[in-house]
Length: 514
Image 1 (tube, rainbow, N blue to C red):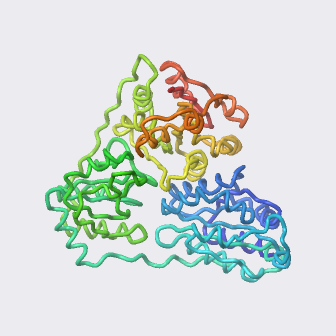
Image 2: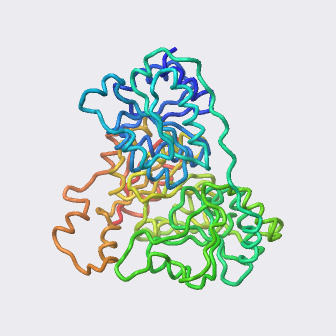
Image 3: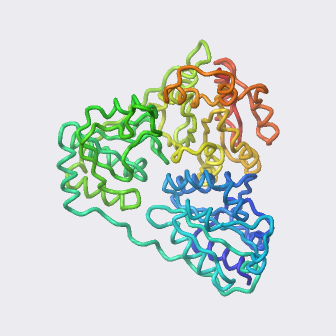
């Protein structure tokens, strides 16, 4: 048994059975080892940024780690931006990065690079395996690290000779360490603060969905505090039956307005809210100056225990949360607007769907009706790096093959990781991609105004517009093996959406909304 085989066996013995891969020469022994184990699900991504977002959203839905297989420092570099998103999401990911054989590193070969340098800025844990006998143990420690603190980025560099040389028996990852918990005194202080007028309870991480979201809603109902969610979310329960929570918007002005009358903020599973960027003459912190901000439970602490302890301290266990009612709109007639298109999707969205939402500007008008649609879950951008939603949908669909997945993306962001359409087709994933074709980086047009520029000319327009030539997403989808259709009227949009929902494979709808 060689080092690569010992690592694959270690991964399987430790419960890691999915790898999002873009291998090269230095990973060929690892590829051969994967080939010996058909129980390992290997998902080929045509760009490394697809592997990292796939593994990120796989974790968000599976609540356990998947792996990536990357090729040297440049391969990790290509994966970097979506690993940044994964880190901000609190996702657990195990990166296996092939390196040159140790003796070959003495020479300045073309692909030689600083894997440690490029990976450590986004990884919580890093190790370079020195020999084949170390690979299995190092792999087990990497898996444990990725599962620690509610999810971390762990990167294991595997020199080619450690993969092909003789190794020892595989290992099994130990359970991650216990999570830290708040002090009893902090729980009591939070319980009292939440009962005060204007108090807010802001939740993140695992508190955004499932039983913990329900428990947070009970605490808010019992104390009278306003339940709140920050702008960027890794995963959140949405739709009818979910506990009502105010979701901070992206723009600075509305974000500040939503927190205007807040007297205190208690944070569980999330960091203090902050504006996305700094702007001339505008504040970075959106809450009123001087109010108490309590980090009761950081994202890497025990969120479930904290919520239960807070429910016990407030007597909220038996309270009934305020819930969103089921309110399905009629499918509108008339012009194809973002508002009308969103109402149609809210009317048709199947229960249990997963929505990967990377539509900041178009989504502001499109997504509000989904608030009272059938119960579903939404994954959002977490680190602000563009191009996560298409490969993220791949990861979500692999993790939850029995659920319908939708992607909401702008035409500009879709082009970052368009290769993911091919992976959807190859894997036969039940994903419907909706591309808002507004022919430009609309967010940049708005941001130019936000920083004080009132007018702009030819050069600025050339950097904002995605036209001349105009992107043809129907043709692009077909070229990747995915059926696509363009919708320019409400009738075409509704028909395309119905078809996508009925299909059990991938499809794409180009929603023209210029």
